[in-house]
Length: 492
Ligand SMILES: [Zn+2]
Image (cartoon, rainbow, N blue to C red):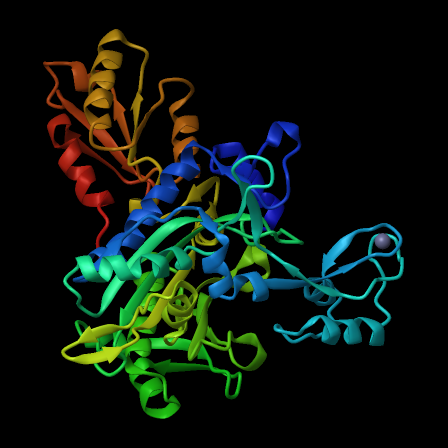
C-alpha cells in the first residue's frame, strides 16, 4: 500500500484527511473523523495504561499549548530549533535542504549546518527541482510558530514545539505536592507545533501533531526499575552508533557490553514489549536506532529512535524515541527562571536527570493502519487489535421486521451506555459485514426471526460473528455485554 492508497482509505471510511478540506486543505495539518477520533482515544488510553498508570508516582498532566518566550529561550528552542532551508532565486520556492538532497539520493549527515549543506549543494550542482533555477545560500530557519498575545504588538508567545517543555515547567510544583519523591513520572498527551518546510508523507511530518511523552525524573545513582527483569532478557533489534550494524541483543547484554545504563535498557525492553506484544507489530518490523555524533542532541547521553518498517513510508521510520536527557532540562530552566530546581533526597542535593519516552501519536496511528489493513481473498479487513477498534461491535437486524427492529434497537440502546457500537439496518448482510470488516469492528451481532420467536429454542439469542475468522456462534442477549467486554478489554 502506498501513501495515496492509505490516505484514500482514511478519507473514504472516516479516519483522517487534510484540515479545511473544502477549501483545498493545507500542507501538514490534518483532521480526524469519527473513526479516527475514537481510535486515537483508545490508543492514548492504552498508552497511558501501559506507560503511566501502572507505575507508582507516575501521572498524566495537561499543559498549555501556548508558552511565553522565556522558557523557550532557556530550553534552547529559540536559538537551536532550526531546520536549514534553501530558496530558489527564480521561482522563490523554499526547500528543507537535507530533504531536497535526500530526495536526490545525495548523502548528507542529519545534523549538518547551513554552510555544510551549502557546500554539498554547490559540489553536486543541485538546482531547483521545480524550475531548474539557481539555489540561494542555505540558511537556518526557526521552526517554532510564534503568536502575539494581546492587542497590537502584544507579548510574544509560541505554540509549544514539544509537550516535554510543559512537563519541565511543572516539575517543581508537582514534585513538592507529591511528597518530594523520586522517581516521579509526568506525562502529557497533547499537541505540538512545528513550522515544517516540507510537510509530507501523510501523518509523518506535520505542522500540528499530537505527542505522547513521559518524562521520568530520577536520581541516576539509585534509579533501578526492576519490577520485571524479563524485560531485560527480551531480544531486541538494535543498530548501535558504534558500528551501525543491526544486531539482535538483550538489554542485559547492552548493559554488559555497550555501557548502556540498566534503567535505559529496561525501558527499551518495555517499549519493545508494547509494540510487539500489546500492538502485535511483527518482530522484524521493529528496531531501535541509536543516534550519535551530529545526529544526537548534545545534552542526550543516550538517544535511540524507535523505528517501524512501514510499507507506505517505504521502510523503517521513526515513530518514537527513548532519550536519556541528563540534567539538561532542569538545569536550563533553573538558570532561565532563577529558581533552583535541584531537590533534596535524604540529605543529598541533586538535579534530577530525565529519561524521556516520546511517541508521535499520529505517526503511530498511521503505522497501525498501514500494518493492519489486510486484503484477504474477497474482503478487506482492518485487523487492528480489538481494544483499538473504533467500534466494539455492530448491531445488524437481519430482516426489516418490526419485532426484529425493536429488539435490535433495544440492544443498541443498552450497549451504547458501555461500548462504542454501530447500528446498521440497510443493505444486504454481506455488504454490512464487509463495511464493518473494513473499519476493524471486531464483532457483528445479527438479530433474526428466531431471536424474537418465543417458540424457538433460539428465542432471546443472537448470532455473533468474529471479524478475522468469520466464526459465528449463538449467544444470549443478556450475555452480550459480558462476552464482548472480555474480548475488547485492554490487557497485557
Ligand atoms: Zn525554482
